[in-house]
Length: 467
Image 1 (spheres, rainbow, N blue to C red):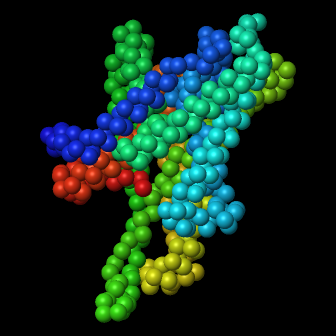
Image 2: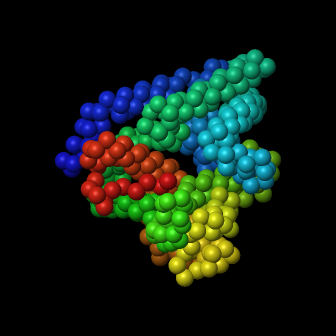
Image 3: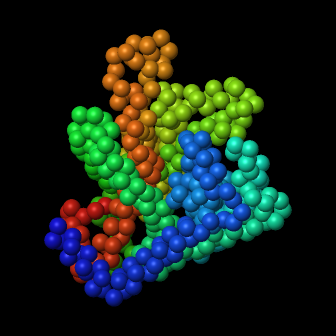
């Protein structure tokens, strides 16, 4: 603990790091100030009721990445989601368009060009999303009252300008934190938007302990809940830093008067190469039925039935969610990681894996290892994402066909109905929070070590980032 406090003090003792930290905190404070400025012309009380009815729909999904701004429709309601969507689209398009693929390989100049295209696409997506939000708000009503005080063209234009400008400003804040702060600007903005709800979650647990929400088992339930949260966070840190290191031997080469190569290196393959992208894709797809049910449940009863079957905690929801996460893990890793290209680069540089022939055999060997790691990573993501949902809503095994009645009579209620905990950190948000925290600490430690200061941990126990 003393070492950690000493490293923390060193961060403010070094002038450059102190300026970067204070600048980052100032930018994040600006972001939080904007989270309290509402978009004009909207009945926020009725809007809050709409979100209560739409739990589990795409509304909750957007609200997660906006840090709660989407629910209150502040000027930052779109959050960082348009930028994330634009980045993912361009990353996927590099496989389809050779021009983008060439830009990606051109180094710093190509990276700047792709970043510029990402900004333009972010503005376009923000305008489209703002228009859809404006039209949707004007079409919706609650208890016979409209969500918009004065609907019309003026409200639409004002909403589009406000939300698009807010999204562009958040993008600028993230880039400033990346360049002039401690890095990971976009990730830190998402991180702050999520952890701001931590006091609310702590207050909810305090109220349950005070009122004895779980009867005589309340103290034991709180201890088990806290222990499980700590264990899950430790498990995420352990797996996110996990790697499979493939040994690579480089042959000796004579370049002029110098002998190059001849050393042993390692090719690190992460256990969770897809990061948080597979759960995001899976959650967005599974939110579609709930969203359609929210909009069309009065007209079409079968859509409402589909939405009920695919709600949180339902057996079919769990099965489809796990399947989609694993499939998207393989899909994303297959796009961003090319074993054939990696094997060719190793062969051109005189590298080979001991016991494996260069070329096709090396590519197949790396692909085989990557498939196993991706399967393990997909199962890990599914477990981490489902565990918080089970704590909230339980596992609705009593809804299973044939055996549901027997399960309902013999299984404990806290398994079937959950602990009714307002667990603010869902699976996806928990992955983001822990991952960004680990990356940020690792970057700060690297800055300290570069300046000959001790880091947060000792030598071999240093924190390994996800990158």
